[in-house]
Image 1 (cartoon, rainbow, N blue to C red):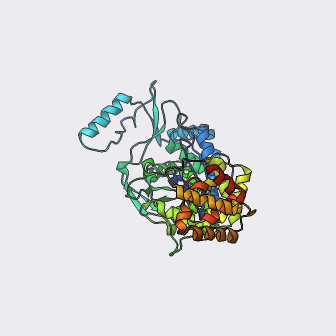
Image 2 (image 1 turned 90 degrees about the vertical axis):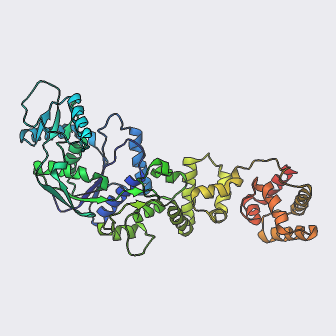
Image 3 (image 1 turned 90 degrees about the horizontal axis):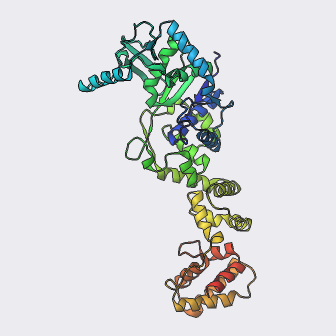
Length: 458
């Protein structure tokens, strides 16, 4: 093994990429980039019943959307199954593992006995010294049961565990397939992984996997266990807490760079800085800045960061993001309407915190529906709208100053306040009470479309 740092992100394709998994991928990727190392992607697809190609593609697409791209072609763990079993055979030969012939009924009886004594279940190890038998078996790793084990964790510090709490864990199932503990250990060795950065719910797995490394006399990687992400109430994050997957955030119009920035700050800090460019993230990221306590998901903070990026990023780039967003999650928008949105993009960007907000702000452009106005507009307001149409009839462009002057004329002649004109005309032109300013609406629609919509109403 050379001195180059190599990390891996190893998701299982059993569902879309969770927000916690995305943060783990980001931390691995930034750590590798900061040290001029490699970040590899390993798809842990050995669970044939739950692993789906569609989820694998979704994970790859999501990482690409976030800008987290591995340094080599993604590797499928299932391609290494033969090697995993070879290592299990080696562990059997050097007496680091043994065949367990216990039946399901026998194991259930052991568990029942532990429950009755209010003790956590630990396999008894009664097959440790049994001879060969012509019966179905699993292979268990012979765990060290004496003393304690220490881990010098790069985030949590020194972690100590009593070896008596680690049972002889299964490494090969009855059907001959390897378990996660064996496959992950073998692949980490074969891929020359130097650092394993993952959630702190993997701590017990680490103590099991390091035993496999030591039994095989392999160099043991360094480990960093990052705290989990909790809900605002401090509970483990679940789908009931709203957005749980990366795609959930993409669907509401969060920009990839915004979510990436938020995930970076979710458990990591550098002084009081909040907004980081990609270059700054790579330059400044280190494991020393990762906290030990769980981070709480804060939707308001995500929206605030997203709003900052939308307001300060290149307008052309945000419009491209908007087009990509609508193509993926909305009904197609005609080119003619897209051009109007682009020409007046600042209008729709105003007060928007997400791409979804921009879509809703601009909806009156491409999704106008004549509604029943009788309950919303009085006869007197209708006369005001007729007067406005008469005055703009000979106007051929949407010049703002010219339109403002005509509106002022109507207000003076009818002896009304602006709101008495603004609300009914807004309803007629957009189909809603909530829309941009009247001049912005007229400029966005174009004077011809304004006349058409008023005529349609009258």
